[in-house]
Length: 103
Image (cartoon, rainbow, N blue to C red):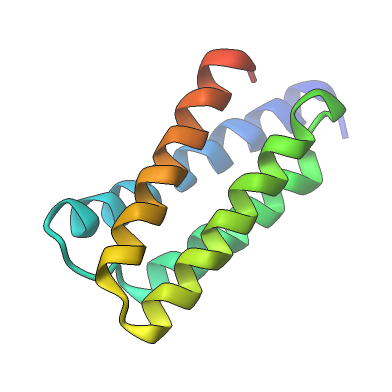
């Protein structure tokens, strides 16, 4: 796969992640549980991102994926306050990656 095609795939993957994460964030900001399907989609996308990750930011992808999995557990248990905190942590992790690594 050429770098150009890989880069386009990475760009579209990031856009899809941002779209799904914005839906999750909206729910958290309203102090509501995110939709379980959205969280599962975020996990799937984060796993895809991990498979494309360069060594320099692979650990951050893994951390993000772990937080997304924790969010799914909280959503399944109906723990709104834990879910809101985990969404905040995911947002912080995303912001850190965007500031530190230019993809």
